[in-house]
Image (tube, rainbow, N blue to C red; front, side, top):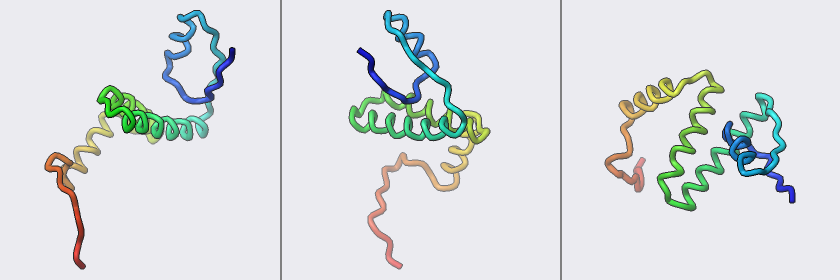
Length: 104
């Protein structure tokens, strides 16, 4: 029985599947498709986290964000520094503040 996925997977997934005595059929995406598939993968990983409430899903989300950053020429260090700059400028989420309304 053949199961079709046509989705982006981690680099070692075909090797792992073949280690289970299964045959894989893979191809390499071009840059445009890779970007689209990464965005799809981000949604998939976020949905898995939302459905499971498992912190084990968070590193998967981070891995996709790192790959997306690399498309823009950003390293993990760059992304971390940008996150720190945003946190310094606007704060983090540690105080659990909910903005209810603003009167203008």
